[in-house]
Image (cartoon, rainbow, N blue to C red):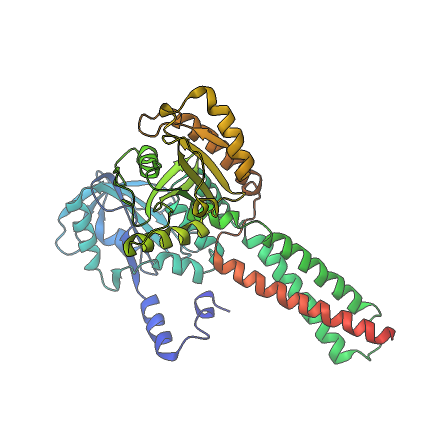
Length: 451
């Protein structure tokens, strides 16, 4: 089947007509970020892409034609109607199907000034059947022409949006087909099992059907079930790293939560005040800790209150705490830290780390004994002491927190195949449930035959 037609089968007729019409047109767009830059790249794709070379370029000192694909030619860029020279840049020719979209493509590498870019885009508009590309249309054409599948396109989008080293690594593996290969293998195995099962149903009494065929199908389905279930058992690390590791700063009022957030963000992201209950809403800051994307959330102080607005802030804090991957509980040493509020204690679990703030106000001789008592009461694995206002101890906290992130995620993230999209997980879970249903039916049949 022609690749461009395969996606039309289930589309409404009116949409099919519109899509076929737009596919006949050649598209162009600025492929680099808008704004002033040394170089800007304008991409052109479609059956008539080469017209842009014929109508908009002039050799600088000879009459050489652009014939060799994927070779850069220095040319004057001119307006196709007036002939006015717009810029001097590089022109590259990519004949289909050996191009990103699978169609004939041209790239114009021009100077990145706003006026230059606008003039070249306007000039392309004057060529017949040329139009500005819609958002994501180059990728759409690459998908329709079997140059990229959906997982690779999603990986490409994640690669463009990656902000940290770990996000970059995950996205690059997916863009290069890291998910496509196992998924395609599972798909082939499922189709094979379905075909064999249908053959047994239709021709089970035929002598050409060998004995034990269904036993092999059962074994293959069981292997599929085990393989996909193992793939799903990844603690959602891929999705967590893709979206950012959620770290919630929790604790009672005036413990220094907002000060710690500002110290980590290196700016005044949250309002700091001596008045209890200043923080009423969740304040987020995105950080890069050792290559890991982290979203640190400052939450309202946890305490009993009669203030309706403060109660709403506490409710939002609890909701964010439940969604967090790691919790940092901040307690103040200013008043001796003799007891932990029951509301604060209720949010402390195995994913909670403790910070004793304002250690410059506490007697250092009694600090070790206090830490031992708090660890015994709460069961937390790690306790830091620091002063968020002066910054003392914050560097040690950050260094050790990066080590915690590595120990928590590094071993799993090294897996070349990780689920990064909730959509993938939902489909795989549905697949596992159907395979499990098939295996359970088979077991029932075996038991009834034995009886």
